[in-house]
Length: 546
Image 1 (cartoon, rainbow, N blue to C red):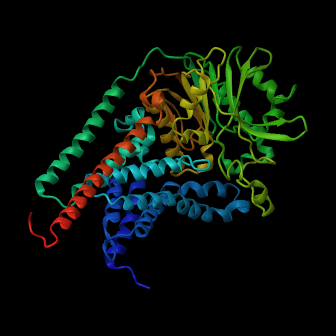
Image 2 (cartoon, rainbow, N blue to C red):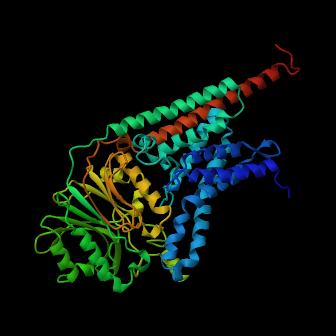
């Protein structure tokens, strides 16, 4: 067996370190120079690794996998937190979850690196091919099986900043291509070339960066401010996930939410009160049963016409008596003496292992089950469409995990033929602990506002809750981790449909085609040159000039 040389080991270490550095650009770290780690990853793929000099495809795949391990080990380190909520039952799974998730997601990067090496491109074509291969792999990561598009490279820019506005043009996947080109450009700039040519490369990259920044700054400056919509109240009660499901705590938790919901408003009373995902540790069917004390208390708390949007666990009984469990958003309207059901949204994209167990029958036989506090896994709701609410603009609900997916609201609009005026995102980020997960989840939700040109009202039980405008900026107060209170704010206006809302991932596809065309253009000329040399050799085998 041949041991790898020093340069090959250094390239592997560079790939691992480059992925780790790139992950530090995301919240809560916010180390944007870390994006240069993608340049380190590209350099590692060009470093020698075989007898012929260039790294073979299998070596490039290994280096791509190492880069992914560094990236995802930092990006998804919060994944251990859900298993520690019930540590006695699930704690043993925590280290396996991190290792398997980071290693598994890195396979997409390994495939991207192998494909890039197979193209044999270098220089500018190599840079564009690198961006195309890796951004295409990230698109696959967001779609294969159930998809898991957490911390796409294009979402590394702080949401609401000028550079983040590129998502309005090409979505998070298109912005990933752009981000990879800009951040990996140092590997191209420092590549073999005369000093003057390197200077031109610096000018070209800086010009592209400044153009995107200037366009984004102009878009932010043009964010519509009026007219304002109805006042919305976000309730954050700071309920600890570890003790929430103890039966004796239900009454206290309910009273906490009720007291915050009925707190006097500073000016205009809210038309809508929002409680987060799974706000109460009970099935809502029991809470809303006729004559139940919780139903009576809610009916008294809501003013006539006022709407409560409550994240809740819900049970349906089929004709055969079988029970189906849903993770839902239930909308209740006060009538003055009782409650009226104003709408129900059932979560469509469920969290694997958290809300349902893939291969559930097999997993059940070996003693595994999802983390939900229900007798059975949740069942996914139908494909979403916007909801029409009494006295409020049409809304697209989005529960927790669904905020990760670019195009979620766009697909719902196309399905219904109607565009909502805003997005309501309820989430239970208490599962993510108090480190990186909640801040990253907020950042991704803000990208959905940029892509769609729609404001978002976001409610969580322990933070981070906020109102987000159509440029991805938070407005007014933000309820951070561990805070308890309310946010009363008028609903911000929507923009006209963005290019991404109109065309979806077509701009991203165009960028991939552009990269492939430029790489193929090079291959065509190389092929023509080789064909010409062979033809000349046949005409003049002695090497004489004809």
